[in-house]
Length: 212
Image (cartoon, rainbow, N blue to C red):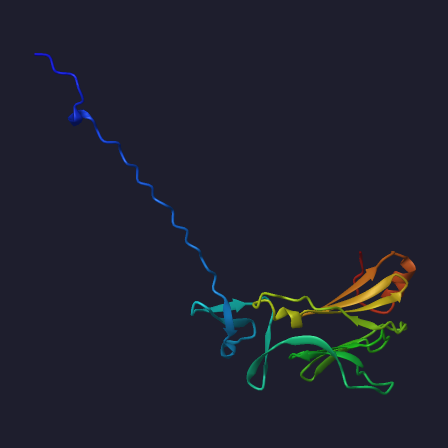
């Protein structure tokens, strides 16, 4: 006999239910510096205690510490005014600004001086330089420090220092940049005139002039 038409519940498949998996967002929180472990200092490294209970060692490209009475202290090249007021004419002492705390003592004259413009002293050794027959009393200007917000880089605020002498000749300035390894001398020539270059060269045996 023919099958009766009608709803056959047994032949109807229930709708498939799709499962939705939500992606879980994991936020990675970088650990923060809590403090420095000063007992682990070396000439080129600092150890920082982090918020996740780890220690992070930073190796710097230049010295950041020096030994003083058995302790490793931060190098501080901040240029401060020295206590010397007068010197004799034959003295090689530089009167002006000197680095605050470092193994090497660097000094710069308050004014452009033909004899005692700057000096470097390490232990019992000392070098003094100036410009022969070249003295115009241009006053030194200490440039502002580059402030660092990153605690790992903050040490460079006091290591990198710059001092300038403007208008040592017309349109000619002199700049010294120092860190814990070197002193860089730049002569800025606004307008290149051979007579001025010859005047500068006559005052120093070894000097490089860069036109800006």
